[in-house]
Image (cartoon, rainbow, N blue to C red; front, side, top):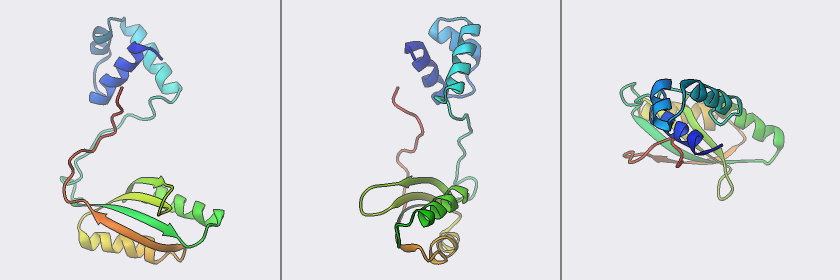
Length: 150
């Protein structure tokens, strides 16, 4: 990966709809060269996905919760079952296995507090493997990005 690839990735992070022609002009390359570079970056997995970033509040999700979770047991099958459940649940937007006081940290969106409470009953209280969970409700979002410092 060279400086031109990093410039292309930076452009894509800012606006994934940037045209091939604009990218080519920005890095002083041909459109064919840009297309080859982008294809290579996609095939190598550097570009994992191109997606729209939606406004969760405008879509009715007024609550963002940061939840730390401790499991009851350290059995691999139960850990894997919990991981799979989190990966499949649409309200869980980010899910991390961590070292420290908890086993996992997740970001959860909900329409309102009642919706979040339903989530906790369904996701945590109904799971005998969850020892405890701690929730912090986001009051305001000062920065949320998927952009990497290139």
